[in-house]
Image (cartoon, rainbow, N blue to C red):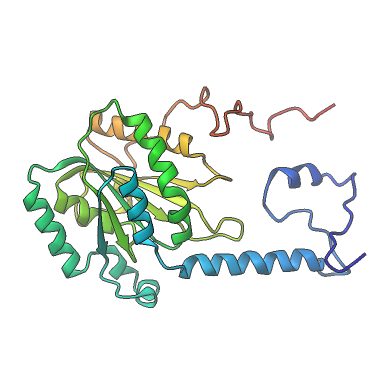
Length: 277
């Protein structure tokens, strides 16, 4: 057996079936008292992918061009973190706009008075890769599902070196009733491209996480675009009805009848399903 070949797996291994159903590192086997070479190399590769995702520059120009092709205006802003090192070492700077960006947004709001129902903010966060891969397909599904609501919308706000709380300042300056933040989540060793959604009703500076609702792990191997859009729409409609968001607004969306993005019927929980005969 070459050192790159995977070692044979005992068909009687009770973990084998679970290994087929999860990217988690289980049933890796062993070589003496150590991991097999293949498993060790896979781990190092996943770690490198996670590091690369954190440092990948935000391609805001490419995303802006894609939005423009779909007829959506965008506005580029920057947080108070001047570069990536500053962003990683000073989380507080990523939670507020730079002075120039704040002034630019004030000028936009003055030219478009009256506020908006919904502002969508896209920030690179800790994985610009997630934003590059998932923003457009997710927004497509969201706009399909909310087309009947008739909400007024601001341009899509793109934020370099942004963290979740920067959306509060943006929402307040725009006079937005609701704000949805799309942001790259901290990469894991099996998910360097996970997109997070944060929803806030009546955003304003100084809110804590208790006032936000989070939908996590939006990606092809995680929560589908359609399911994420369905859950977010439920929260938005309930927030408008109850005029709140956060810990007092529970996600009780009914999802049993939804289909996956691939069109196949949703499968039940494999942990509750009887084993094959």
